[in-house]
Image (cartoon, rainbow, N blue to C red; front, side, top):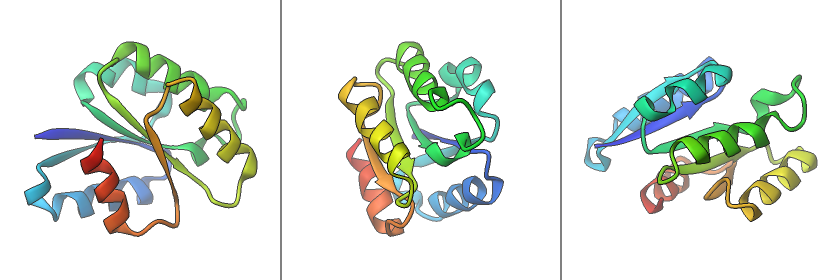
Length: 126
């Protein structure tokens, strides 16, 4: 069973994704909600192998907060996979996602408006 950490301050988003993932038992994913991104680093070893990081949660934060989170997660779980969930209407976060990936602190990204099938295919590919 592959654990999927859903890192977002948007409870509706995280809970909805978790419920959808549970409805696909053949995928053998176990969702874990991580609603407090500041706590994620401490919980990383426990929570699993794949993290979906909602980049939009950092809207009121320092711009480098998501960058730092990805860096720390990569150090804490070097064999884990990180998938960035990027808002399609925010060019600065899109640019940051590309830089995070270029520095090998995330494995891939998807936009918020992707289909559920596409997101699940990405998770399977990681």
